[in-house]
Length: 253
Ligand SMILES: Nc1ncnc2c1ncn2[C@@H]1O[C@H](COP(=O)(O)OP(=O)(O)O)[C@@H](O)[C@H]1O
Ligand SMILES: [Mg+2]
Image (cartoon, rainbow, N blue to C red; front, side, top):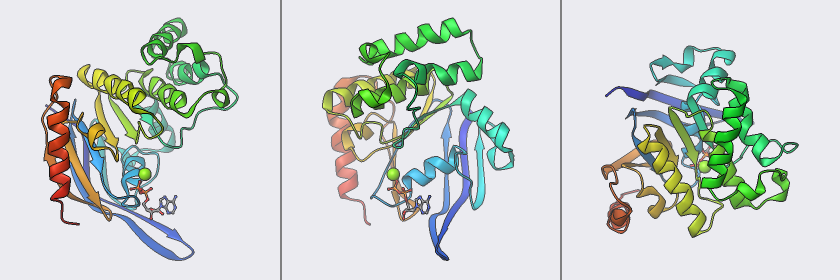
């Protein structure tokens, strides 16, 4: 097994009005290729900042982040954006979808940009993904003409279009009802079973229980983690969820 992500002494400080806010304080962790890791923790503890910095969306103040063997802190803007386009998928809260494009055009866009496969194939893949996630009927609508849940699922389709090595998901079920949440999770698990690593932030114990390892984050640092192992069947969900709940109850923070 090789490491897809290796984070060493990662620090991130925001300075606002001359006030420093040390949002990430010497964070250390790593992920093996193919792992599915969830991050939980109180609001404001730095979970989103962690996803932004380890994915190269935002710069770090100190430390090192290795992604698939590359030291991302040493890469220039162009190299970083190519790396993100070709190897990473994003399902973020601020969805960064293009308002002037239809749902399907948003989904195919990173596929056209990456040029990893012909456009016709990108189109077919986008339709396949939209069908699987139950949003094919919204393909030609503008993103302002769909529900938050449909948009969230489109975001997941877009993140999968280039078959990334890693998906970063920030509360991917945040805007969704129970049924749509389970569809999104099923799709993340499918991608993970195909070898894609997943790093996901969630507030939901149920959603976290799909992952194989849950990290608890407080005040910019890792407080603890629980190893659940890979889920081999959805029948295990209830037991896994209870494990996560009990573990969180015992967390001292
Ligand atoms: N772009 C930014 N500029 C300044 N401060 C920020 C910025 N983004 C986040 N923060 C601050 O960093 C802290 C952690 O935020 P965040 O990573 O969003 O937490 P979480 O995702 O765990 O709720 C908060 O105090 C937030 O106000
Ligand atoms: Mg957040």
